[in-house]
Length: 427
Ligand SMILES: [Zn+2]
Image (tube, rainbow, N blue to C red; front, side):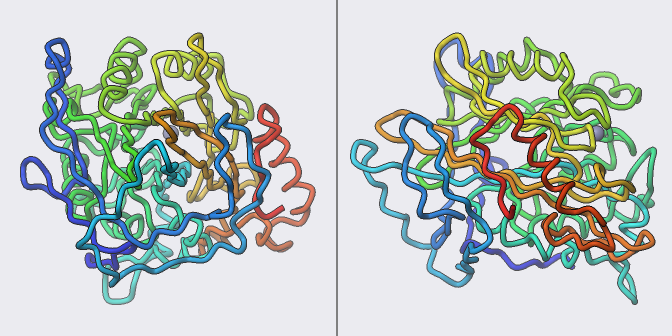
């Protein structure tokens, strides 16, 4: 299943080298000393996009909107709508430019999941597992995911913990259900070596998905990914705390972006010059901990002070709180410390719970605000390690989660413990 339906109308990705990565700005750090060296900016023309919450009024001060969203969200299917003429750009002075961003945690394809996805006659099909929550991804203007298990393809030999390798069809599903940006920097990036990473990147490129955190070359790493949407530009950076003790191949640090505060600060500063909004993926923390570690808080603070607008965390396999970090310069940065497992085969209520974060990002009169954080808790349905489905937590069913109502309250209390205005969708 290599051919997947493209939603949101036609996208015409152009890559400086003729590849299929959408919207790249070429960046050489050294070039910034003497001025910007911007080679290519591509504009995604995505007509017909629907925001999850079109009713939310702009919140110039970043004050939260109380509008609960999601359950009634219409899913526009703009495929086939004309993409030839650009959306007229309102002048920044008289209109807000608004983008809804969605983010989820780990897609970790254990063997029981790919076995469950096997299709008679060959190949794999994962999309139906995402179907129950698909509309929450599709209806966002931009959606990002952490691809925890490398998508090296079946020919390389599929594998499970501790060194994962997943079939290409996982990538097809990410594309089909509406993800745009795929984080590759995590502790499993090097599980199956350079070949798996290269395979994965080529495959995602072919799908027109933007990848961050693992790269083909140093040159590739130096190109900060910038995506334009609704007149706003977004730069994406990704880092991981480590690679499970697997050494990074000598001379090839670009294969996985390790956390290095100085480097991240320099990258973020460079990204700020390229884009309105800087989003950092951080694979960090201690597994199965409900609260962020000191290291997580310290990195999030450093990223915020360096100029990140949003920090999206993952790795602990469980949910952790979200919070605003007020920076020394009077800005504020949204942080989600861990979005938990989105799909994985880890038995237990906490590890079967993840969620879809949504944020509104607006630019008005030159000022960017991030507001209206909302979160749909999700549940990884499985029966005897089969019948995997990602469903809203509220739909988990008592056979899966006998005390679902009480557990849902605990989840809401945890993720919102540092952010009272967080809207829990589907309460
Ligand atoms: Zn991890």
